[in-house]
Length: 328
Picture 1 (cartoon, rainbow, N blue to C red):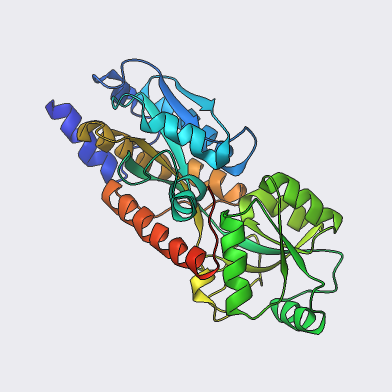
Picture 2 (picture 1 turned 90 degrees about the vertical axis):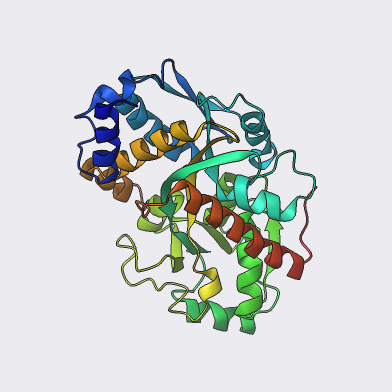
């Protein structure tokens, strides 16, 4: 490693370089050709959105195209399995998510990849506040209203999920148990269809990320009753966190991140980590993330990211076991 390269890594890690001011990272041995960034879902969702935002910025910083390739299907398992088997050379990466690297491993014993052993985590791209949503057709304005309504009208509340064993399913079952709210699960084939029915009033409740629902909350089609976030989110003034509602187990953000196949050389992982953190420390990136209802994550090292994935898998395994939820 040259003296200039070592100097860059030290300076970038300290957040002292502007995102577009230092193209020399692309002049090093890696990357010497375009990088494929696999999004294991169809275009248009929150994971795809995050992947495209970071790919554009990485392309400019690394000096090589970072090409997004959607490989959706099986709840993200198809794309994840593809990357797990790819050459560990830094030219095939994946946008990781709660679905692919936490919930799928927690509920599916026959998953065709190991979320821990088959990947080399890089860092987080964003954190996403999760929101408890209610149809605007209901006379429910607050979380307390929901509890009272549910207990006074047993059997009348249905909640939508993105499918059996999804993050939204597990989270709502946890809410149902801890807050003693009677409601019935209605699984859908994906979050988009579920939210369409929620807006139409065909189901009454759902759990989803803020980024995907901010527009519908602002235009009054949906109502936010509580948010899973470390603090109040500026886009939802007055909406309490689950911690404030004495339900701390539910106060977990979702996230998207970057990972490479296992055994990718450590210097490449470090280079991608430093580059991604440089992007996330840029004020323009921070403004773009906030505008989309996303949070810029704290500085999560590759080792810390691996530890968080493992801890969350254990957490959701406990939730799934308590509610007899499995998917094969």
